Image 1 (cartoon, one colour):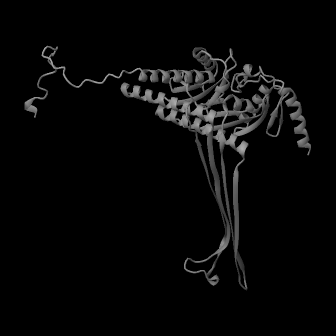
Image 2 (cartoon, one colour):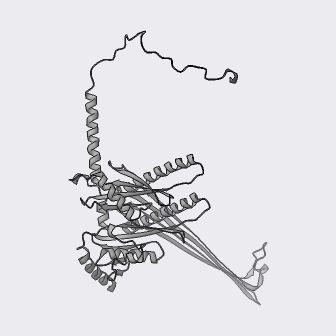
Image 3 (tube, one colour):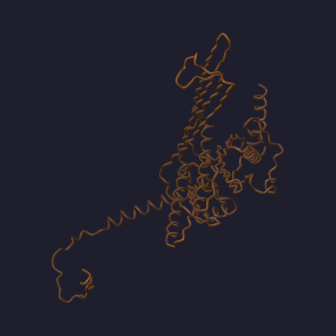
Amino acid sequence: MFKKTLLSLVLASAFGSAHANVDFDLNDLVPATDAPSETQAVNTDDVKEVGDLVVAADPKAAVLVAHQSLIEDEGDGVKMIAVGSGIGILSTGSGSYETYENRNATLLSKRGAYMKAFQIAKKQLVENMEGMSNMCATAINETMDVIDTATEGAANTTSMMSDNCAESVKGALAGYVTFDVYDDPSENLVRVSLISTPKTREQTKRKVGALTQTTEPNVIFKQIIADLQAGVMPPVGAKVITNAETGESFVLGFGSSIIRDNKNKSVKRKLLGMSKSQAQAKARNGLIAVMQGEQVYWEGGFTENQLEKNEQFEYPPESVNPADAKVLAEDKHTFMNNIKSFDSYKSFAAGQVPPGVSVKTFKSSDGDWMLAVAVYAPSLEATAKQAAAENKKRVREGQNASSDHKISTTGGLTDGSNNTQGPSGQVSNANDL
């Protein structure tokens, strides 16, 4: 009762000030992975944490503390945050990778870790929003085998335990953005943090019908490049930024592929082209996932078996007759536990990429990654639809402007045309045939 009352008081005080800051923007957040001097720019003295809910007068401080708390827990998890637009959910997933002599293999392992961390973070968001299915079955069997004679007694005891649990999560997810990505080479560990708030879910909607202005595409791309150069371009996920001039929101979908190395220059060029295509496809799919939604599935569980035995006698191999039992000089104690666990992550996003979406590709500074960003803006979609309508109109005009002249199939023979000799000569050597 006391905890619920405290939670209500904290929420009331937090929302009283949080809702006043309606201009809260995720682009203003300071990731916890920045230098200490930079993270101190946000004052976190008044942040309160009640259970998994983090509240503060400044929503930036709440997000920063929640993010740092998940990192310090050294595990995957979620935190609820009071932000200006309502209750936000911050989810952090992690994945480990291996290093190999083959550089390509190391980068592939690292990209796989990013993808795993991304899937875990998405699964946790769905789990928090939709709940999950849980089933566990436990069985314990105990047996005793006791022999007593006129002169002595002996007993064998056996205890067996079986514990099985299975869980699953499934649901639709949309409107989340990537808050933070981090690679720790010393630990071979990567982390991906996603955040979903009422504002991000609203910003990622298509609002072409309500568009009243058209933005120059070059202005949009210049701002996007400047924004990416100032921050981090993640290999997965999406982001939302706002046009400083019009207030229009742009949705960015990210994709990546490693740039494979090869000693053959021709093969290396082909691999580079493949990396570019892969990154662009993933960026477009990332855009679809965050704007139109994706289906997220997870199944996991464990099976644990345990055996504990204490023996004071044993039967000979050929008999189970108590009269043939042999008493052991010392008690024989046996203990064994075996556990098996499994996790299966799946996500599915499909749809039509909106008109006007442009995909830009970049090489990482170290040359290891091909990174792509798919850019959507309502003004770009409106411009593309207008261009498509004009193109269709022009095609129809061209078709309607054709004459009724019927093609001539007779006449035309002449001896005076310019008839130069075409390619002539023996192609194959007769001796080779």
